[in-house]
Image (cartoon, rainbow, N blue to C red; front, side):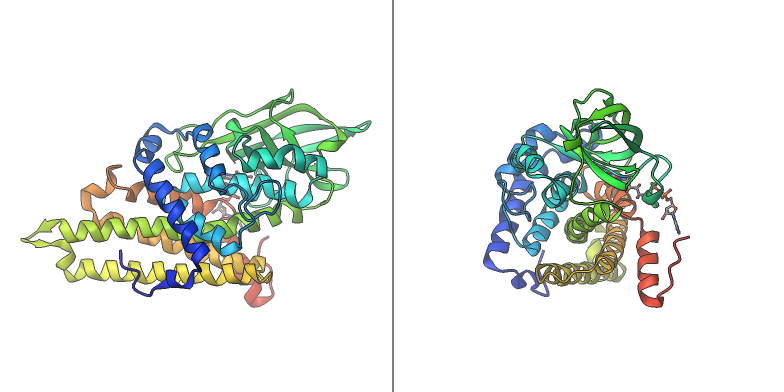
Length: 384
Ligand SMILES: Cc1cc2nc3c(=O)[nH]c(=O)nc-3n(C[C@H](O)[C@H](O)[C@H](O)COP(=O)(O)OP(=O)(O)OC[C@H]3O[C@@H](n4cnc5c(N)ncnc54)[C@H](O)[C@@H]3O)c2cc1C
């Protein structure tokens, strides 16, 4: 599809190389299979993780420990191209890099970093991030999972829900209440008392593993706690990293939907004309492109702010709210352009559309990000 506003001309040569490399990986390794993965509700993580690692995509914006150390816009471009394949693929990379590796990299001890980061950046070890609980989603401050001191050890009890990569992970970064406040723990999933059953019957993000986590008197050494952070700001800073990836990623999903709709509109003939020659179809396509280009501009602007070290959480909320909503609108419009074919996995559109329903909810729902913007505008917090 024509890059009408020449937005990718804004990328430098390295960023364009990353774009082309990830796009061709997705085209060769993901697009031929992802409809089947979605239908069968599988994600071949063990197979793909070393390939993603070899491409430098795991923890790619982190420095050291085998990570690529790219700028934020490059990380965004990679997320965009991955999510043009499937939101499940981008979720895997986001969780690994931004939610599991980032807290170890930012708040971990030298031993924790040495033990996990090189293997995670290579895709030899998989991580997950446990914050959400069955009864505490939007208000994680009230979480019930508790880590209690026993001598120098910690004893962890509680449960988490909706945890991406949970049952395939080698290590879980788990956030729990302690007597000192909320703390993060690096928990090898082989630790006795840890279990992670997969959540089945999802109709969204089917090519992504989602699990519950249970902690039944999980005994951890003192060295399992992340030493450098106490309080909710720890997990919230990880979510800011991952949400930045979403701001870019959904542009890829939306682009895939628009490309599919344009191609279909040019070739599907009704009433002796391609449906793309009807004004009503053109209006849909034109507005889809407007939404896509605006979302891309937002992503690029936030990427540049992040690279300048100047990106605020409420600006990320703006991007997450605006771009996911735009992507979902584009996916729904694309589905209507494809008519009956819009509901099958022969085309990517309904897969993206269903995936984006999860993306709308995870990492802060659209309502919570709306309240963040409401507070930014009025100075009045309306969360409770
Ligand atoms: C596929 C998938 C993968 C996920 N992966 C992870 C993961 O890897 N790790 C992790 O920790 N979590 C993960 N999550 C959890 C996700 O972050 C939560 O689902 C999300 O934060 C919402 O929590 P909840 O589902 O409990 O909904 P709730 O918080 O119960 O919200 C239900 C509804 O009430 C609204 N609501 C809540 N409070 C307010 C308010 N104050 N004002 C107005 N409306 C409000 C919400 O916006 C929403 O519409 C994942 C979720 C999904 C679906």
